[in-house]
Length: 526
Ligand code: G4P
Image 1 (cartoon, rainbow, N blue to C red):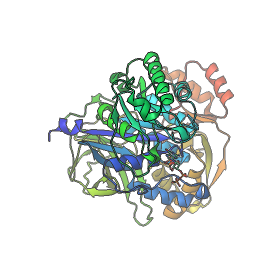
Image 2: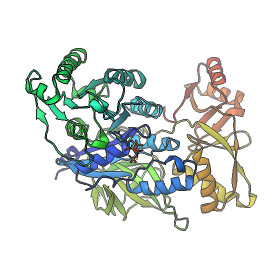
Image 3: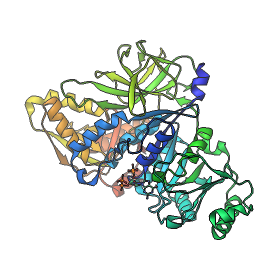
Image 4: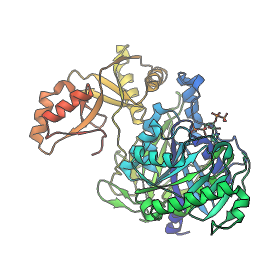
């Protein structure tokens, strides 16, 4: 098959959701449709249940499990779908942000009872930054949820994206009768079943057909006619291009656990979702059709066995054909790298592969050469951009409790940061080291792993910090002056970039007002 045909065949996406909205359930149903698994219940949730929420050992175990489900590949109607898993626990949100850099589109699951929740809002911000096309799946229609019009309004107002329903629910909760597919003009009647995989939809080109009344009852039929009239009147026609440009999010309604509405969404997804896209680098744009291979590492998973410091680096292929055992240019590193152990993930299995194409994600066994954000190419010295660090939310000072193990501590911290477990900032004054995370759990993870894998003992001391802001200024003199006058609050990140450590929101605002020429950024790429 030609490279272009391979590219056109691929769709790489992630499902994002607030915990409990139904991401795992939807994933499972998609895999069932793809024939990748045979029975429901086969996909392990990567969610941490409430009983083990504070037990991070359990969480690491879960993360171990989730390597297998990091990428789930399957074929559906001739399309190769790569579904990237995102961590269920919000303390690992940074992992999710990075995973979103490796996809071409997302499906967002919203619980119809709870509406748009906080985690969804945060994830959508990342999608907006990258103009990632979004399909919205409103789930749990078998429950008494909120009014569909209200839900759509909330998506628009809270997530800042225009919506266009492509299906419409008939009733809800106990009175849920099914959904009408506005895109294909097909009626799908609801029969609660967790196992059904049927595709027996009835086509109604004309909703005035009296058969509709006998199928769903005259009350429901009239309501549906009214709703459809209203939607077609209020919402502009759906244009695929608007979705691809992330201007409009098509919306589907359904019930994942009952396998309802999922098939419709999947069928539309393969028709409209973007194929592997052109990507930005520091030098130029790279198109997937280019014959030479290029790709970037967006996730590193450490081996839990401390005796073998093996890690799996997840590589997104951006252009050309990736081949096993071929030496590639490691743009940041000193020497070319070749990989003999290359895995691809098919649903729950992984297999050693010889080649992979744009849109694919491969797992590379690595002994410590790669770090998150690294680019591999077939020669050119370019670096993929758009894999930023985000300002952490919780900061703690690292205190070394065993001066004899300072070297081990430095090494351990460096490697854990390369894996993206957390971010390290080193203050210019006094070289104090501060770890920043998005959740409490990472501190326990880091403390344990430093001891277990590097034999270093640390404590974390709370720090009164609000945000880490990367700073820049077009006038170097002014930047130097700012750094001098605020030197107590200036630190360096892992790439030696200048960071202003702000103690509070109001104080940051004051500093911003006092230094209008300095730019403050909340992500490391600007
Ligand atoms: P997550 O990965 O987004 O965190 O959510 P997950 O799929 O684990 O679903 C969270 C809960 O919501 C599960 O129930 C799941 O069965 C339920 N659920 C998913 N889709 C639907 C739906 O369409 N309708 C209804 N009524 N429930 C749905 P649980 O009780 O937490 O787990 P389980 O014991 O049922 O597995």
